[in-house]
Image 1: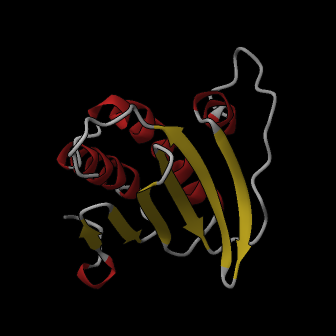
Image 2: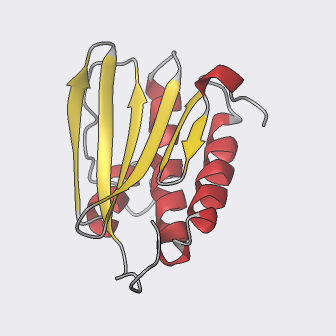
Length: 144
């Protein structure tokens, strides 16, 4: 996997966490890892929207931060997928009202519209932007 440190990669059933250098390939690598992991977990119903939102948040981190970018995701009780993107910049992201001819500025609007909830929290070294997606009900006996 290009751009991912082996020591910073953890993926077990129901939990995945990666750290990417703040380099252009981070967005593509994050999309691939998120897509592959969600398919492995049998969460195809939320794969496309999760990949889109992670892509937007990692892109925001690349534009504004210079250090490593972390992505973490795990299903929670209550049929919720929790996804978190962290970077070393302490400033919370700002939602913008993008004009129709703007090439950017819609990432947080997409997160707000497509997720059931989202927010930010400060960390020891930066911040985390998180969002939740509703998961479809699972059949009895299915693992997460």
